[in-house]
Image 1 (cartoon, helix red, strand yellow):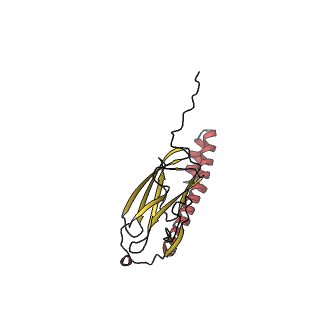
Image 2 (tube, rainbow, N blue to C red):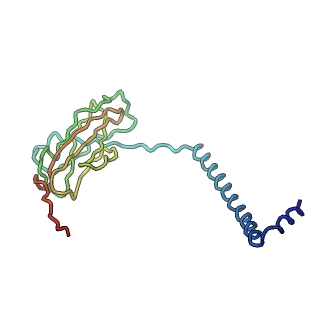
Image 3 (tube, rainbow, N blue to C red):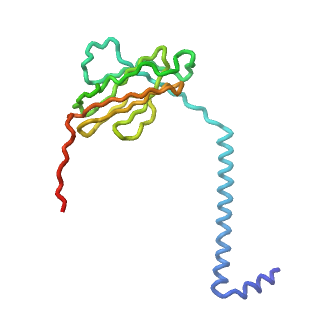
Length: 197
């Protein structure tokens, strides 16, 4: 058999003989590398499946308006955390649907002049379970769900539409709120004429 290989190899044209031999030699390390990386990958998958990591517990902060607040006309929102819920709360302790919720700042059709516009959401916990919200401004994408306050800055002058989805953290019950407000002016921006050649 070795003799047949030598005879076949000698019959090959000169350049092709060396090229095929080098190619065959180079494919061996590549194949060994692929086999080794697959084996390592399989071992790591087995290890990660065998020892699941415990999930981190998460605290949810509910922000509600202070009942003793005397000055209702203040434009600067001051949310205060009043209740911290643990994830061990059971569904029997609260109603699963979204309770009464509203956007108290900015007001509907309000002209806002501050550089930082913080949205204030009024939601009182008690008989209702906690909620999280997702928002989008104008035609942008929806944000991730959060229970934290949020603000906007560097807005273009003119009309802005805020959409807010409020969802219960223990069920799929959801409420959608809309708010229209203006930044600095109610006038639409004036187009700047350009000269075209």
